[in-house]
Length: 201
Image (cartoon, rainbow, N blue to C red; front, side, top):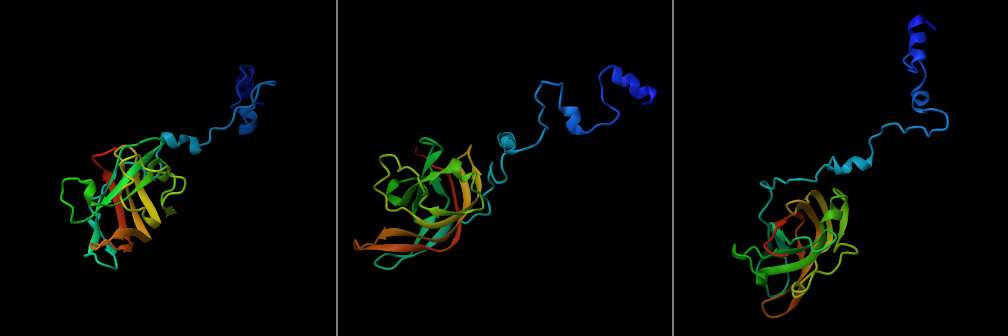
């Protein structure tokens, strides 16, 4: 050992060789320190890709429905609307007809369903079955709407602060009642599907 390393050794420092494991093992009788490794526990400091503010300026303003029976051409108005968190990260989703006036009215709602927004933030870019498995029923006051929407969706962005999402609907359908009272199933044309915060809980 050279004079420099000898001097370092006197003070208990190990700058002249030895592995990282030996350096981090600590004194005898003390548990070894774990090496610093970035893992999933850092997710709260570094949000997953796709979680955060959404720029929806390029998203469409309606989604076409193909219906049989006594109903005129029907389409969904986009964005759909999300209510506030009513417990456990769950939100009521309402989608209205594209002919609905700009002023919100429950009478223009095509379907209602519960969206587990918090859970969606961990399932981005994965095919998710609709309605959502194990999602609780919507709070009282929303059950009168037709629905739920069934099919598959892939969500690419979720905003947990402003209550919004962007995704795509695939092979989806929703029940509807025609102008003569006849009940039917309307097929949703595959396409972008997005929602923002609505004026309800």
